[in-house]
Image 1 (cartoon, rainbow, N blue to C red):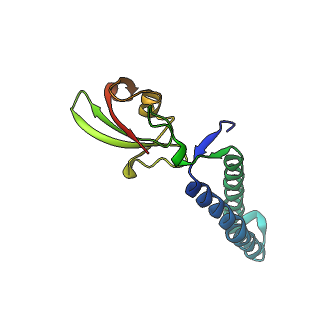
Image 2 (cartoon, rainbow, N blue to C red):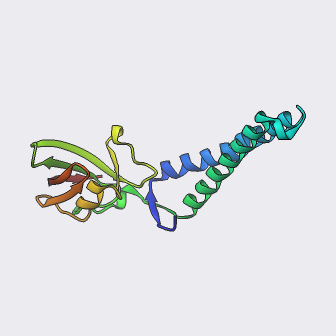
Image 3 (cartoon, rainbow, N blue to C red):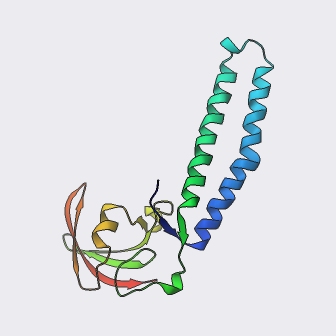
Length: 157
C-alpha cells in the first residue's frame, strides 16, 4: 500500500493505540500461547501448537499492515478544508436523481469508512464519482447496481 491516505487526527490516534495494543498485549499473549502449547508434548501432532503459531503469524501480518498504513498517512486539519468542491473530509449532501432520495456522506479514507455512520471511502465508486464536483453539479457514478446520477446539493466540513 504505497498510496498516501488522509485521515483526521482522531483516526491517527486510534490507529496508533490499536498498534500499541497489538504489540504490547496481543504479541506477548501469542508467545505465551505458543510456549504453553509447546509444553504439551510432541509438536508433530499438537494442533494447539499449530493454531497458536498460525494466530501469531496472523497477528504479525496485521501489525506489519498497520505499520505500513501509518507510514503513509497524512493528517488533515478539518478547519483548512476547501468546501467549494467535494474533497476528502468534506460532508456532502447528495440527491439521487433516480429515486429523489437525499443522503449525506462524509468523504473519508479507506481506514475510516463506515457506511452505517455515513462515512464513505474516497476510493469507493460514489466517492470517486463525486470527488472534485461543486454544488449544483451532476455526478454520474458507475456502481455495482448500475449507473447512478447524483446532484451535489451542499458541501460542509
